Every structure is written in structure tokens, then in C-alpha cells.
Image 1 (cartoon, rainbow, N blue to C red):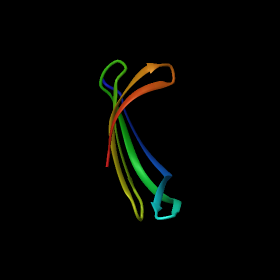
Image 2 (tube, helix red, strand yellow; image 1 turned 60 degrees about the vertical axis):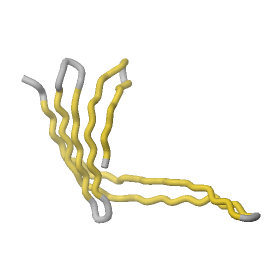
Image 3 (tube, rainbow, N blue to C red; image 1 turned 30 degrees about the horizontal axis):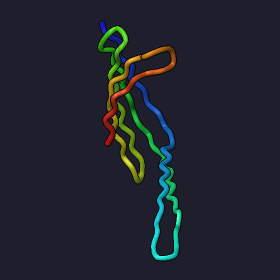
Length: 86
């Protein structure tokens, strides 16, 4: 039987972006930082001896995040992940 783990979480999603604009004789570096509180659920399913598939959904006032992926351990504390995020 394959092991499945389901959990709930509350957290903060921090998004930071920096840009550079140039026009005429002026150059400006600007940044945009946003913090979103979210509550969500995730599930992890073993699909092989070492390979796992996972799904995560998180919702908040201004942002909804969906993520899914496949994880495979390469060496201790290092994993190779293929992720689809919306």
C-alpha cells in the first residue's frame, strides 16, 4: 500500500520583484514587495520507492496558489523537483 500524507497549513507568501528603467538621462531601480496570508492544504503520495507526487492549494484574501509536482531524492537533503505552479 502506498503512503499518502495530507496536511493543512497557514503561512505567508512573500513576493518580491525588482526592475530597472532607463529613459533619457535618468535611470531608476524600483522594487515591489507583497505579503499574502494564506491557508491551504497539501497532499503527498509515494508513487515509487523514492519518488513522490504532491499537490498544494492555498487561498487568501488577495491570492490563490495552486502547485503540483514530482519529487525524487538525489542525495541526502537534496531533491530533484518538477513543479507546475499557477
